[in-house]
Image (cartoon, rainbow, N blue to C red; front, side, top):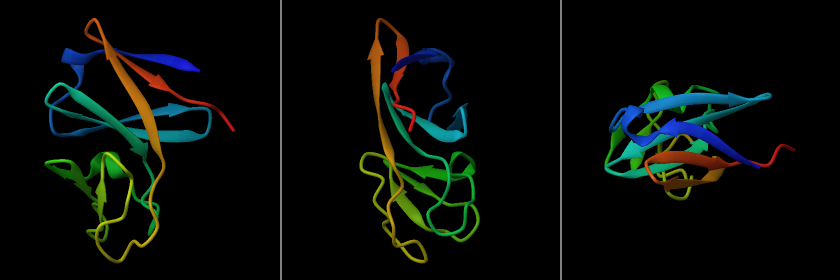
Length: 103
């Protein structure tokens, strides 16, 4: 399912934004003109990754400091060891779309 998120220029740079579809929480991050989408729950402690600090293409969990790659969802530092889900994002004509399939 392709969901329109909104205009690219309305997303803050280098910060997370949480969107919710059904019971799924997704964190969106704008890095330059690219947008990345990952599961919003840290795989270690259920904290919101949208509230974490962004460094280049990584986000740091605000609760215990685990870092995740925004491109792959891979956990890059302890205490998290499991990845978070990633979602495909498209930017077309200045609009951001998320490809999301409900479970």
